[in-house]
Length: 404
Picture (spheres, rainbow, N blue to C red):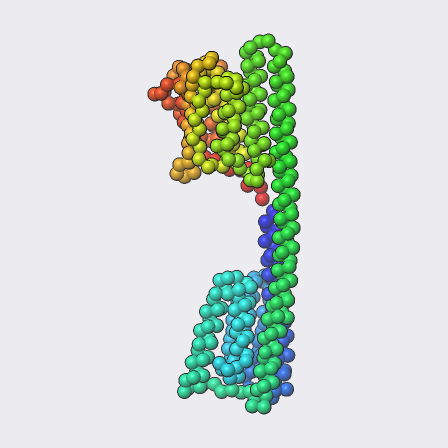
């Protein structure tokens, strides 16, 4: 929604700029027509060119209110200006005419509108200037200077004033005003972005704190329980909560509020699980092979929970007691934006026929359900010692990107 509003503001600014320039140039042309005819005594071509341009351009500008097509309005006035300026230049001395500088204003106006229009009118004006020069130096001058000798200096003076006023008083003034508005809008947007980032960081911080509070409550609850199975369930739930809390912690501690560096997250998560389940001094070797991959929160949390369940099962049931063991985690990108996660341990594993359907293991069910949440596929490698999974999935599109 904000982006649409900004586009509307920029469009309104451009419309105001083009329409103002049109009105000013039309009025100036009509005044110049009168000056040429009554003051400079130019009775051929030039005053009529100014008169026709002024009237047609006013009509063209008024028509914008009906068709609302800025490009059409601009192109019409540009072509009329190009034709009118070329005619006045030809009939007031050709390449030596002071009015030739008005052609440069058309190029400036083109670049104000778009880069493409600017390039187009730059090339057209260069071609016209070359043609004007060619007819001046050739023997066949098909037009003659209609400005009387006694009025040439005054015509040059008024032409220069006309050009400078259009460039500075109209283009310059309105461009500066438009630039000021854009700069002001830019500052306002940057301030809103900073406020939004601060708010999002605060949300992530509070979510992390709330999840840590839930983890602490589960820890307190488990202290009063003597049943090892129930205590183990509470501990597993606590680890799942911490897995989610870590994502929010990393998001509010870093500059990028939309994605987290997944290698550091997995490293921190698995090291925590090893300490939590095996203690601070364990015989577990951790091998993590993850390149510089960043994932959004919609993918990071379910994938983190999936890794949590896999590693927890490996530490509790695969690598038993204080035995030595290895945990391997590898994440890589493939073609078509697919991500391949390979996880495994060298523990004792579990039977081939055991799966999420015929087992009461919550961990196996969660691994299967989390893979479905990632809209991925899960394969188990039975040819190697221990338990090894390969999960193929794509990053889940951030839900906030769908909000317009």
